[in-house]
View 1 (tube, helix red, strand yellow):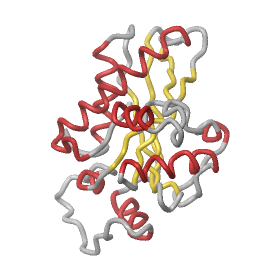
View 2: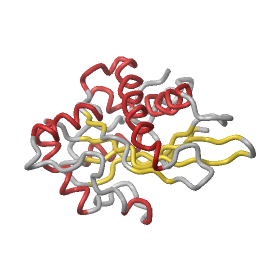
View 3: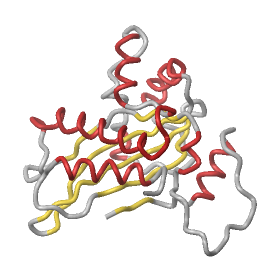
View 4: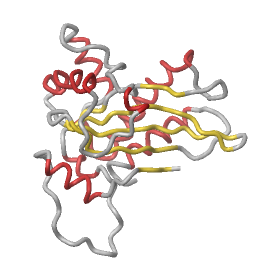
Length: 215
């Protein structure tokens, strides 16, 4: 399962251009060319990836509150490795970098694992909408200290059932931290599996990397 919403490459480019970022492509694409990943323009930018923020799980989900902290740190590390290994390298900053920045600046940066995305559970934001105020406030100083502009936010992990199998799904948002707006919104998910495993975590992280650089 792999799903993104209204996220063509042209849309991302146009939005980023309006925000003062990337330039929109004006040439007609070659019909024989494969579509590029929706976040491919960001591969050459300095982007910060936040730690995974929220868990939505019922009693039958593979990950509950007792396992959440370990699970999301493993997923954070796997996302960092998966994106960096696609040729992006250390151009991007990842969850561990965000945690270090917050630790060095405790008077300015709050908990990087709780940045204020809860509103995104109840409100269906659209491209170009302003970010929730709390999230915007928390990101403002963080992006200044990190010397970046765009932030990829792993908003929430949840699990969907397919009979005896489950699918791990991750909701994501790309935001313009300086403009305070949403640039991209979407979800990625794993193939159905019978149990939680390190391979499943790596698979979910790989789907995130697929949004940036094709495998």
